[in-house]
Length: 143
Image (tube, rainbow, N blue to C red):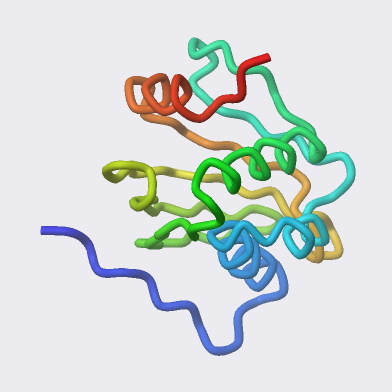
């Protein structure tokens, strides 16, 4: 049995609102709006480190998402949030991404939010190693 989807509060904290908007714009591949929520010095990490994935910058993550948007012909991602835990400057999100990724992957994300709570400064993705490697073969651009 799947967990029940998380219901965002009607009046989220400013940092939770930033993450809520990030999910909305990410799932729709609205890169212009997404870019306004990400600090210029964003660090995106995928762990465990044994996967060997280098950290990405804001420009690199937006370029990757543009690549994905093209692969899926702009079809939005189906994202379900199951739980959110909020601390000072940090939000942890447990959720899944299903279509159009051919099956579903369950994820844990940690968002770092700047002191003004208006921009995401760090984004750590705790990946299922096997699933990540399978998706990387399909999704990562080849040079």
